View (tube, rainbow, N blue to C red):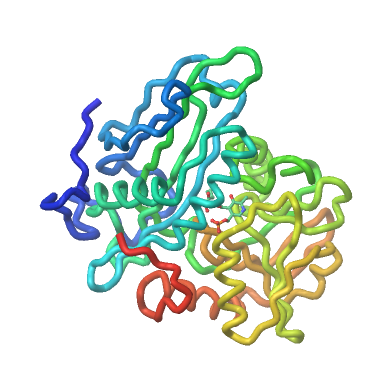
Length: 359
Ligand code: PLP
Ligand code: COI
């Protein structure tokens, strides 16, 4: 496969955001994997005990051994982060070192080699630079989604960690995860399946967590619920999180932003950012166990994450009961949290917390 030259090398041409010559529908991207110019690949081997220099590849394929531990034993984890174009055509990653940090915790839990912040950031920057023309323009409301992926690529047949690993960063331009952008979605509380066990791997971003959620998701969608809320697996009495996003409940009377504390919830970087923004707005932020019964007290419910951003959830069905949160309009706190985080990402409000990393 062709290896491309590093677009960050001095003198390399770097096109402007939104100039990829492929008729990309910038304002109607949705969340799908569209072809881009290149991805980054690095290899770790037990022979060297170190990561190779990153290479850029244009063909979206990788050759791995049929005994690769990722394929058999799910030794794989990933990240998700976005790069945003600003009005001056500069491009900025949102909190990439937080993703580097979370990837290390996923790698540690699944016995894979870790990457330093420097390696992670340089691979992410190289990937964005190589795909600059695919960064949605500032006017589009989209972003370039980066998917860093770490997996065991070497063969083992007994249950053991691999002796070789690949780290890949791929990129694709994205818009809204759920149809309709900032419009409320209907959710279902899952009772037939569990997402994560208290001492399991729910708090890390490993591939198997998502395989386990495919069937519940398909069944949920068939029943008319685009989003699923999981409860704690031990008692099914405490709120955990959605399939691909964290749960936030807003109690307007108490001016309170509530989000579950649990050993089996993925620590969301978007959630942490919204907690800071909520504090900046003068709200009380409570990170604590959230009993199912508290669903009756929330005026607004939000699903938050890199892909879903801030998605209002206006109702949650649990058996015969339907919890309603506000009207069919987007709640006022949800709207304000969304507005503030998007303005920071898009360079329209000052980055007071130092969340943006210019590429
Ligand atoms: N929870 C789960 C299960 C996720 O897959 C994600 C997505 O990454 C999140 C929460 C949100 O995390 P973040 O805000 O870091 O993207
Ligand atoms: C993200 O928000 O970046 C995710 O990884 C969610 C993904 C499973 C769609």
